[in-house]
Amino acid sequence: MIGSVLRKLGGLVLTLFLASVVIFAALLATPGDPVAAIAGGARPSPDLIAQIRAQYRLDDPAWLRYLHWLGGALTGDFGHSFVYKTDVASLVASRFGITLQLVLLTTLFIILFGMGSGILAAARGRGTDTLVSVLTSLGMALPTFVVAILLIWVFATSLGWLPSFGAGSDGLDRLMHLLLPALSLAVMFIAYVSRVTRGALVAQMHSEHVETATVRGIPRARIFRVHVFRNASPQILAISGTTIAGLFAASAIAEQAFGLGGLGSLLTEAAARKDLPVVQIVSLLLVTVFVVLNAAADLLSAVIDPDSVGTRRTA
View 1 (cartoon, rainbow, N blue to C red):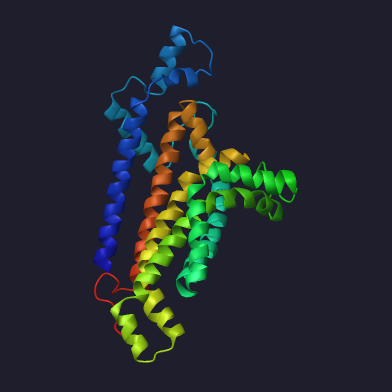
View 2: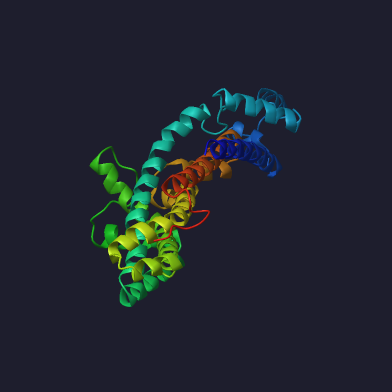
């Protein structure tokens, strides 16, 4: 177990290092000169251009700029935003809370409705299975921005029940402002997790050890809980972990549609305005979150069912 954890930690560090190289190289390869963004849109004089390029090391070799950036990031110095004229760390910190709250609420919806509907489809018979299948097919076919428009039209414009713009203040007001964005972001992922959950459970229900347990007269509820759900949980957790980790990147669409001003919208704005220090750190942060959550899901699967990779339990 310890060896597996160490291997995963080593793989995580290597993945983050390679991601940092790819992100840095990709941004260097994008067209356009960041000098315009730093100068604030004005036409800079040759002296100002030279001063900006020297201050931000824009004329240094790519490898030297990368080492300088990586060294600063490892010590907590993420640079200074070209556009927002503030240090990147405080800028990201001010936006991270909104995205985290949005992802947590969306995760709750995915667990409740995604896993819940998948379990119902597998356990309750053909009628429920058919209904869930139809709904999940519809959910997977609807892009997030289309769902956002529909939700705004129904619950904000027509019924006036929920706000459709901004993050609100703290507490209940924040929750009310996040409900529609979280629902719009969750729909496609709910459908996906539901299908994976249903497929994993059905596969276990038709396995040999479950049939043996049924013949031996073990109660159906116990069979489902101990032999079906537990053996299917590693696959469900792995897919769910990947899905939830991807929410941090996917949140940009919902944040833009509802004007939340979180990390996703910050990344979109910074990329459009060539704000390289912001794009670099936010991109690396999103990759870090994705890799860490995936590793956590794998470890949790191993804790729940250490034998999931090997032989299955027999009744």
